[in-house]
Length: 303
Image 1 (cartoon, rainbow, N blue to C red):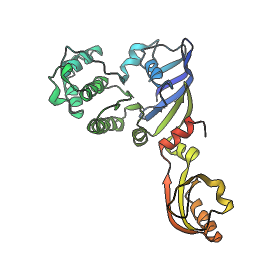
Image 2 (cartoon, rainbow, N blue to C red; image 1 turned 30 degrees about the horizontal axis):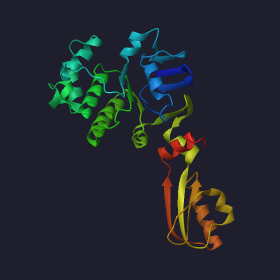
Image 3 (cartoon, one colour; image 1 turned 90 degrees about the vertical axis):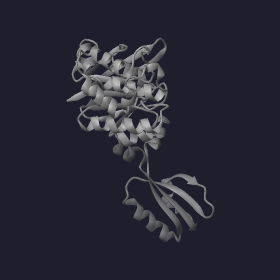
């Protein structure tokens, strides 16, 4: 089943085209990354998915329920963790989560509330007023609020922005468990190492449009490949290999190059050409491209 179906969604704010015909299909059980620079349209798209704003054109469906015409059913399927720290200062943590449960008609939900608090290390703060919590603890409560009705689809909008390492580890451990149990997770983050570690598939937005959407492995193969770093003690790179240079590198002695390869099998051929030319290799290193390489390449327009 498709968890989120986004079809030709457009949104304009006066002269600003925030989204220009975005279409994405996110399958049930996926851990999906939605990436892009500031102003790319990520938060606008999430706000449309959550029903907070309406698209000018296009449709969004959560488990087949339209977020406009079938809002109640769509909202029950969805849990959203927003970027902003929004909280009611008059309640304790437990009261906040009970109140959130009530919005979904869950009157007897204490067992799940206790489990969520335990997994987010909120139990010691259960009876603490929200005003007395640190920023990191408040963000944990936001995550707990999004999960309190056990939504099959979880959207995390910059969930670890400005928080400590402990919260990140706690959050990802719990979210990974929920994903293994079948929950669909959509993540936006500027911490690309988190996206690379967690997401199997990603889409990249730029100026309101999808500029790439694929599995992490396929993006690495198609866009960046791998880098073979060769430091030569003597000799130089043969003319027949110079088209592989991504950029020259600084070296204390000799010459050092970064060569683009698309498959590990190409390494032996490169080494053979170097030996034929009489070059003596001092050091060699094979580096796999990472998500940051891919992101920068796509955002700079070079695919």
